[in-house]
Image 1 (cartoon, rainbow, N blue to C red):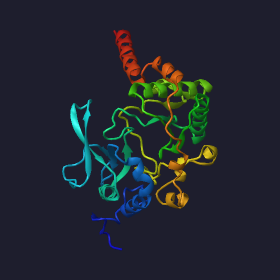
Image 2 (cartoon, helix red, strand yellow; image 1 turned 90 degrees about the horizontal axis):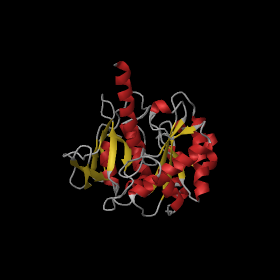
Image 3 (cartoon, rainbow, N blue to C red; image 1 turned 90 degrees about the vertical axis):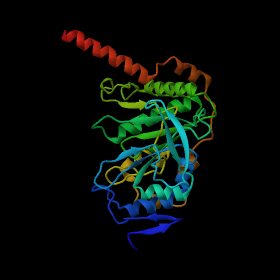
Image 4 (tube, rainbow, N blue to C red; image 1 turned 135 degrees about the vertical axis):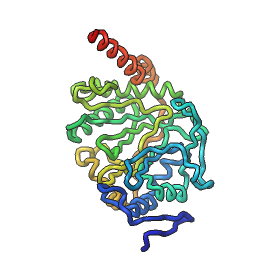
Length: 318
Protein backbone atom coordinates (compact mmCIF):
# COMPACT_ATOMS: atom_id res chain seq x y z
CA UNK A 1 0.00 0.00 0.00
CA UNK A 2 1.14 3.56 -0.63
CA UNK A 3 2.01 6.05 2.07
CA UNK A 4 -1.16 8.01 1.18
CA UNK A 5 -4.74 6.78 0.89
CA UNK A 6 -8.34 7.76 1.57
CA UNK A 7 -10.94 6.31 3.94
CA UNK A 8 -14.50 7.52 4.44
CA UNK A 9 -13.67 10.66 2.47
CA UNK A 10 -10.65 11.53 4.64
CA UNK A 11 -7.25 11.87 2.98
CA UNK A 12 -4.59 10.04 4.97
CA UNK A 13 -1.00 11.13 4.39
CA UNK A 14 2.54 10.10 5.31
CA UNK A 15 1.29 6.85 6.78
CA UNK A 16 4.67 5.16 6.84
CA UNK A 17 6.32 7.81 9.03
CA UNK A 18 7.20 6.79 12.62
CA UNK A 19 5.06 8.46 15.28
CA UNK A 20 8.21 9.20 17.28
CA UNK A 21 11.67 7.68 17.73
CA UNK A 22 10.48 5.52 20.65
CA UNK A 23 6.84 4.88 19.67
CA UNK A 24 7.60 1.55 17.98
CA UNK A 25 4.71 2.44 15.68
CA UNK A 26 4.04 4.31 12.45
CA UNK A 27 1.24 6.69 11.64
CA UNK A 28 -0.35 3.81 9.70
CA UNK A 29 -0.31 1.69 12.86
CA UNK A 30 -2.15 4.49 14.68
CA UNK A 31 -4.73 4.98 11.93
CA UNK A 32 -5.34 1.23 11.53
CA UNK A 33 -5.72 0.72 15.29
CA UNK A 34 -8.12 3.63 15.81
CA UNK A 35 -10.17 2.62 12.79
CA UNK A 36 -10.42 -0.98 13.97
CA UNK A 37 -11.26 -0.10 17.58
CA UNK A 38 -13.74 2.66 16.69
CA UNK A 39 -16.86 0.67 17.58
CA UNK A 40 -15.58 0.53 21.16
CA UNK A 41 -13.88 3.93 21.33
CA UNK A 42 -16.49 6.18 19.72
CA UNK A 43 -19.16 5.47 22.38
CA UNK A 44 -16.65 6.74 24.99
CA UNK A 45 -16.18 9.97 23.00
CA UNK A 46 -19.74 10.49 21.79
CA UNK A 47 -21.09 14.00 22.48
CA UNK A 48 -18.28 14.74 24.94
CA UNK A 49 -16.07 17.83 24.40
CA UNK A 50 -12.76 16.35 23.31
CA UNK A 51 -9.15 17.26 24.00
CA UNK A 52 -6.43 15.37 22.15
CA UNK A 53 -2.69 15.04 22.47
CA UNK A 54 -0.92 15.29 19.15
CA UNK A 55 2.63 14.33 18.29
CA UNK A 56 3.96 16.17 15.25
CA UNK A 57 7.23 15.20 13.64
CA UNK A 58 10.22 16.54 15.52
CA UNK A 59 8.08 18.13 18.26
CA UNK A 60 7.13 17.21 21.79
CA UNK A 61 3.54 16.02 22.36
CA UNK A 62 1.06 18.82 23.03
CA UNK A 63 -2.59 19.01 24.09
CA UNK A 64 -5.11 20.56 21.72
CA UNK A 65 -8.50 21.66 23.02
CA UNK A 66 -9.63 24.35 20.60
CA UNK A 67 -10.43 22.83 17.20
CA UNK A 68 -8.09 24.42 14.61
CA UNK A 69 -9.62 26.82 12.11
CA UNK A 70 -8.38 24.62 9.27
CA UNK A 71 -10.50 21.70 10.46
CA UNK A 72 -13.24 20.63 8.02
CA UNK A 73 -16.67 22.13 8.64
CA UNK A 74 -18.30 18.71 8.94
CA UNK A 75 -16.71 18.14 12.36
CA UNK A 76 -19.29 18.83 15.08
CA UNK A 77 -18.24 21.32 17.74
CA UNK A 78 -19.53 22.71 21.01
CA UNK A 79 -18.50 26.02 22.62
CA UNK A 80 -17.35 25.81 26.24
CA UNK A 81 -16.38 28.78 28.41
CA UNK A 82 -12.87 28.34 29.84
CA UNK A 83 -12.74 30.17 33.15
CA UNK A 84 -8.96 29.92 33.47
CA UNK A 85 -8.25 31.65 30.15
CA UNK A 86 -11.46 33.74 30.14
CA UNK A 87 -12.40 32.71 26.63
CA UNK A 88 -14.73 30.43 24.74
CA UNK A 89 -13.15 27.22 23.48
CA UNK A 90 -14.56 25.39 20.46
CA UNK A 91 -14.26 21.70 21.34
CA UNK A 92 -14.68 18.95 18.79
CA UNK A 93 -17.25 16.21 19.23
CA UNK A 94 -15.83 12.97 17.87
CA UNK A 95 -19.07 11.18 17.08
CA UNK A 96 -18.24 9.21 13.95
CA UNK A 97 -15.58 7.33 12.03
CA UNK A 98 -14.87 10.20 9.68
CA UNK A 99 -13.98 12.58 12.53
CA UNK A 100 -11.85 9.95 14.24
CA UNK A 101 -9.92 9.33 11.02
CA UNK A 102 -9.35 13.06 10.59
CA UNK A 103 -7.90 13.29 14.09
CA UNK A 104 -5.73 10.23 13.44
CA UNK A 105 -4.37 11.88 10.31
CA UNK A 106 -3.53 14.93 12.44
CA UNK A 107 -1.38 12.57 14.55
CA UNK A 108 -3.76 12.84 17.49
CA UNK A 109 -2.64 9.93 19.63
CA UNK A 110 -4.46 10.47 22.93
CA UNK A 111 -8.22 11.07 23.34
CA UNK A 112 -9.39 12.83 26.51
CA UNK A 113 -13.19 13.32 26.69
CA UNK A 114 -14.90 15.27 29.45
CA UNK A 115 -17.02 13.67 32.17
CA UNK A 116 -20.04 15.61 30.89
CA UNK A 117 -21.87 15.50 27.59
CA UNK A 118 -22.59 18.45 25.31
CA UNK A 119 -25.92 19.98 26.29
CA UNK A 120 -25.81 18.23 29.67
CA UNK A 121 -23.06 20.17 31.40
CA UNK A 122 -24.83 19.93 34.75
CA UNK A 123 -24.58 16.11 34.79
CA UNK A 124 -21.24 14.48 35.56
CA UNK A 125 -21.63 10.91 34.33
CA UNK A 126 -18.91 9.23 36.41
CA UNK A 127 -16.98 9.47 39.62
CA UNK A 128 -13.28 8.88 38.94
CA UNK A 129 -10.46 7.70 41.18
CA UNK A 130 -7.09 8.14 39.48
CA UNK A 131 -4.44 5.94 41.09
CA UNK A 132 -1.02 7.53 40.76
CA UNK A 133 2.06 5.61 42.02
CA UNK A 134 5.14 7.33 43.45
CA UNK A 135 8.37 7.35 41.50
CA UNK A 136 10.40 4.19 41.75
CA UNK A 137 7.63 1.87 42.96
CA UNK A 138 6.47 -1.09 40.92
CA UNK A 139 2.94 -1.70 39.70
CA UNK A 140 2.10 -3.93 42.66
CA UNK A 141 1.45 -0.88 44.83
CA UNK A 142 -1.02 0.43 42.24
CA UNK A 143 -2.85 -2.89 42.34
CA UNK A 144 -2.91 -2.75 46.13
CA UNK A 145 -4.40 0.74 46.07
CA UNK A 146 -6.99 -0.28 43.47
CA UNK A 147 -8.12 -3.09 45.76
CA UNK A 148 -8.58 -0.56 48.57
CA UNK A 149 -10.87 1.50 46.35
CA UNK A 150 -12.73 -1.67 45.35
CA UNK A 151 -13.31 -2.49 49.04
CA UNK A 152 -14.50 1.06 49.72
CA UNK A 153 -16.91 0.78 46.79
CA UNK A 154 -18.28 -2.52 48.09
CA UNK A 155 -18.75 -1.01 51.55
CA UNK A 156 -20.68 1.89 50.00
CA UNK A 157 -22.85 -0.41 47.91
CA UNK A 158 -21.37 0.87 44.64
CA UNK A 159 -19.81 -0.79 41.62
CA UNK A 160 -17.10 0.40 39.27
CA UNK A 161 -14.91 -0.63 36.36
CA UNK A 162 -11.12 -0.42 36.25
CA UNK A 163 -8.62 0.15 33.45
CA UNK A 164 -4.96 0.85 33.08
CA UNK A 165 -4.22 4.51 32.46
CA UNK A 166 -1.80 3.58 29.72
CA UNK A 167 0.92 5.23 31.79
CA UNK A 168 1.91 4.07 35.29
CA UNK A 169 -1.42 4.04 37.08
CA UNK A 170 -5.05 2.97 36.89
CA UNK A 171 -8.44 4.64 36.58
CA UNK A 172 -11.58 3.50 38.37
CA UNK A 173 -14.88 4.69 36.84
CA UNK A 174 -18.11 4.68 38.86
CA UNK A 175 -21.17 5.64 36.76
CA UNK A 176 -23.69 7.79 38.61
CA UNK A 177 -27.22 9.04 38.10
CA UNK A 178 -27.75 12.81 37.69
CA UNK A 179 -26.48 14.76 40.68
CA UNK A 180 -24.96 18.19 41.21
CA UNK A 181 -21.29 18.74 40.40
CA UNK A 182 -20.64 19.55 44.05
CA UNK A 183 -22.24 16.33 45.29
CA UNK A 184 -20.36 14.14 42.81
CA UNK A 185 -17.07 15.83 43.72
CA UNK A 186 -17.85 15.41 47.42
CA UNK A 187 -18.71 11.73 47.05
CA UNK A 188 -15.46 11.17 45.14
CA UNK A 189 -13.43 12.82 47.91
CA UNK A 190 -15.16 10.68 50.53
CA UNK A 191 -14.61 7.48 48.55
CA UNK A 192 -10.88 8.21 48.28
CA UNK A 193 -10.69 9.05 51.98
CA UNK A 194 -12.41 5.79 52.92
CA UNK A 195 -9.98 3.81 50.75
CA UNK A 196 -7.05 5.64 52.35
CA UNK A 197 -8.27 4.75 55.85
CA UNK A 198 -8.23 1.05 54.93
CA UNK A 199 -4.43 1.16 54.59
CA UNK A 200 -2.88 4.58 55.30
CA UNK A 201 0.61 3.11 55.00
CA UNK A 202 -0.02 2.32 51.34
CA UNK A 203 -2.34 5.05 50.05
CA UNK A 204 -2.79 8.76 50.57
CA UNK A 205 -5.14 11.52 49.45
CA UNK A 206 -2.48 14.21 50.00
CA UNK A 207 -2.65 16.53 47.02
CA UNK A 208 0.74 18.15 47.62
CA UNK A 209 3.39 15.77 46.30
CA UNK A 210 5.87 16.45 49.10
CA UNK A 211 3.26 15.30 51.64
CA UNK A 212 2.74 11.84 50.11
CA UNK A 213 5.79 10.22 51.72
CA UNK A 214 6.26 7.67 48.96
CA UNK A 215 2.65 6.44 49.09
CA UNK A 216 0.23 5.83 46.24
CA UNK A 217 -1.87 8.91 45.52
CA UNK A 218 -5.64 8.42 45.31
CA UNK A 219 -6.57 11.40 43.16
CA UNK A 220 -10.20 12.39 43.62
CA UNK A 221 -9.96 15.72 41.76
CA UNK A 222 -11.16 14.48 38.36
CA UNK A 223 -14.65 15.98 38.51
CA UNK A 224 -16.80 18.65 36.92
CA UNK A 225 -15.36 19.67 33.57
CA UNK A 226 -12.28 17.47 33.95
CA UNK A 227 -11.11 15.06 31.28
CA UNK A 228 -9.79 11.50 31.58
CA UNK A 229 -8.08 9.39 28.95
CA UNK A 230 -10.70 7.24 27.22
CA UNK A 231 -10.70 3.48 27.45
CA UNK A 232 -8.95 2.04 24.36
CA UNK A 233 -7.12 5.30 23.63
CA UNK A 234 -3.41 5.05 22.81
CA UNK A 235 -0.90 7.10 24.83
CA UNK A 236 1.92 9.26 23.48
CA UNK A 237 4.53 7.28 25.38
CA UNK A 238 7.36 4.89 24.51
CA UNK A 239 5.89 1.79 22.89
CA UNK A 240 2.49 3.50 22.32
CA UNK A 241 0.59 1.76 25.14
CA UNK A 242 -3.21 1.71 25.33
CA UNK A 243 -5.52 2.49 28.23
CA UNK A 244 -7.01 -0.97 28.59
CA UNK A 245 -9.93 -2.42 30.61
CA UNK A 246 -9.03 -5.14 33.10
CA UNK A 247 -11.07 -7.36 35.37
CA UNK A 248 -10.85 -6.90 39.13
CA UNK A 249 -9.73 -10.51 39.57
CA UNK A 250 -6.93 -10.11 36.99
CA UNK A 251 -5.11 -7.17 38.54
CA UNK A 252 -2.26 -9.29 39.90
CA UNK A 253 -1.53 -10.65 36.43
CA UNK A 254 -1.07 -7.46 34.38
CA UNK A 255 1.04 -4.35 33.96
CA UNK A 256 0.25 -1.27 31.83
CA UNK A 257 2.98 -2.21 29.35
CA UNK A 258 1.08 -5.42 28.50
CA UNK A 259 -1.35 -3.45 26.30
CA UNK A 260 -0.31 -1.47 23.24
CA UNK A 261 -1.60 -0.70 19.76
CA UNK A 262 0.10 -3.74 18.23
CA UNK A 263 -1.63 -6.33 20.44
CA UNK A 264 -4.75 -4.68 21.88
CA UNK A 265 -7.09 -5.75 19.08
CA UNK A 266 -5.96 -9.36 19.30
CA UNK A 267 -6.45 -9.33 23.07
CA UNK A 268 -9.94 -7.88 22.69
CA UNK A 269 -11.18 -10.25 20.01
CA UNK A 270 -14.86 -9.49 19.52
CA UNK A 271 -15.36 -8.28 23.09
CA UNK A 272 -15.90 -4.80 24.51
CA UNK A 273 -14.91 -5.41 28.16
CA UNK A 274 -15.18 -1.76 29.20
CA UNK A 275 -18.86 -1.61 28.27
CA UNK A 276 -19.52 -5.15 29.46
CA UNK A 277 -18.03 -4.54 32.92
CA UNK A 278 -19.39 -1.05 33.49
CA UNK A 279 -22.28 -1.03 36.02
CA UNK A 280 -25.46 0.88 35.35
CA UNK A 281 -25.57 4.45 36.74
CA UNK A 282 -26.02 4.43 40.51
CA UNK A 283 -27.46 6.89 43.02
CA UNK A 284 -24.90 8.54 45.26
CA UNK A 285 -25.22 7.30 48.85
CA UNK A 286 -26.30 10.18 51.07
CA UNK A 287 -23.73 9.37 53.76
CA UNK A 288 -20.91 9.40 51.18
CA UNK A 289 -21.99 12.81 49.91
CA UNK A 290 -22.34 14.23 53.42
CA UNK A 291 -18.90 12.94 54.42
CA UNK A 292 -17.33 14.42 51.32
CA UNK A 293 -18.77 17.87 51.92
CA UNK A 294 -16.80 17.95 55.18
CA UNK A 295 -13.53 17.24 53.32
CA UNK A 296 -11.79 20.36 51.94
CA UNK A 297 -11.44 20.61 48.18
CA UNK A 298 -7.89 19.42 47.49
CA UNK A 299 -6.83 22.08 45.00
CA UNK A 300 -8.14 24.91 47.17
CA UNK A 301 -6.57 23.43 50.27
CA UNK A 302 -3.25 22.97 48.45
CA UNK A 303 -3.31 26.58 47.24
CA UNK A 304 -3.82 27.91 50.77
CA UNK A 305 -1.21 25.55 52.18
CA UNK A 306 1.27 26.63 49.52
CA UNK A 307 0.76 30.28 50.46
CA UNK A 308 1.16 29.45 54.15
CA UNK A 309 4.42 27.60 53.56
CA UNK A 310 5.71 30.45 51.40
CA UNK A 311 5.01 32.90 54.21
CA UNK A 312 6.88 30.68 56.65
CA UNK A 313 9.89 30.53 54.34
CA UNK A 314 9.91 34.30 53.97
CA UNK A 315 9.70 34.76 57.72
CA UNK A 316 12.49 32.29 58.36
CA UNK A 317 14.60 33.98 55.72
CA UNK A 318 14.02 37.37 57.33
